[in-house]
Image 1 (cartoon, rainbow, N blue to C red):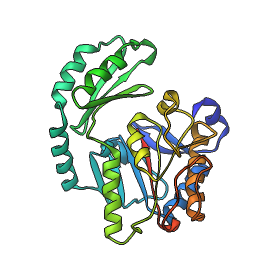
Image 2 (cartoon, rainbow, N blue to C red; image 1 turned 180 degrees about the vertical axis):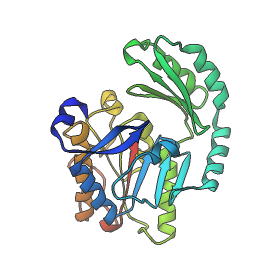
Image 3 (cartoon, one colour; image 1 turned 90 degrees about the vertical axis):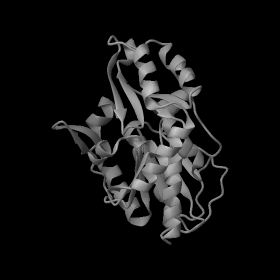
Length: 280
């Protein structure tokens, strides 16, 4: 959001951490998300662990489904889906190196001069909290290359560097949620999936979606990442969040809606589309 936007926009605190406010939404975004959740299935989708996700008070809650741990868990009415977790563990084990091997190598490459902490998340992946100004320039490309040969990926969002199994994806979990909604006749089989995300760990979700949007800030903006039909907001920060929600709602209210730069064809009743928002 930045100091300027925080000073001039009306905001609501949506996350308290260690007794203090941590995360905010604009009052406009609060109203728009609540409206969206009242009209279509919304699936919060995040790299956060279940405990980190549960710290957030999102308008429109409670949500029937949420995807956390970068797709490692599906929450159903707030409860962990044990079958999905067992499935993910089997897939990750079969896909490449184990977490312990990655941690051992990662510890060998870092030091206290630029790393504040090394943490594991849900026994599935790990991440560093770093001082970006002191971070060695060669660290991330070298680490990413080492990871890719072992079935893992490395991604940086601000002060955090994530190391995740390539098989651990948000799109696979969202696809499972989508299948269940169709099977339960809560979603039309041809309903569109719209997704938003801003980091490298969101690219599989944005590519999987029927229509996708990203903000004009964050890791994907710095990479210049795009795919055919991807919409990019005009604004940045909290204003981009508002713009994304307005984009979602336009597509709900107009069954023929396609973004100005989209090459995709809308299909299915818009009132029963599903929205997934990726975040790290």
